[in-house]
Length: 233
Image 1 (tube, rainbow, N blue to C red):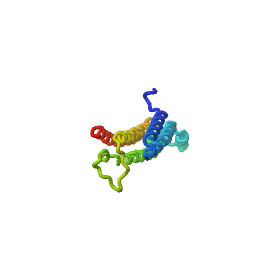
Image 2 (tube, rainbow, N blue to C red):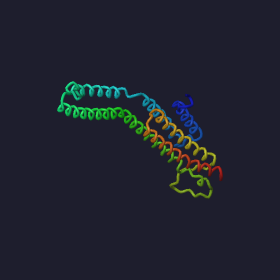
Image 3 (spheres, helix red, strand yellow):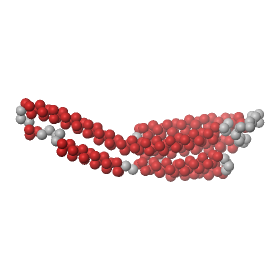
Image 4 (cartoon, one colour):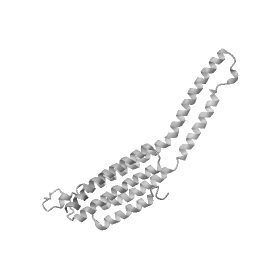
């Protein structure tokens, strides 16, 4: 099973190594702080995903208690048809009405019980999307750091402006910087996948896929820049 599931510990270790690599090559860059935040967020989300694997026992206990209380009330009120009273036409009509009322009550009770069962699913789903919101924000922060790193800016013919950002003039450094951004985006996708692994819910899986698609699309733009650097500089 080792290679069939994601290991949160290995994902965190990968993020830590990436932060160290960025610190060694770009010690003063803001990207290092973003990588450090990615490590911290990876730890938090891995722990959150681990907790979501466990059932919400207090909720299940409340559902079981509500079900038992409903059954007892159903029996106490006497909505179950007393078969020993069926003797004539009037009793037969009343018995049919009693059966209909009983069936309606049972159907409503079953629907209510199913709604209670899905409560745990909705609670976990809400927790997942709250965590994914922070991860989505970090993805956009990573994208902001690569946004101004354009290959044409390395050209000697590219005139700098007073409001322009600091430039990386070395092609290898710029390609490595962009590659680090791409690796960070890949890690965010793997962190998001931990929730799909912990919570088997179609809505959660769709939300995780949205995160992975976002990081993949941004990484694709970064690799277009890297390809341009490798081809021209």
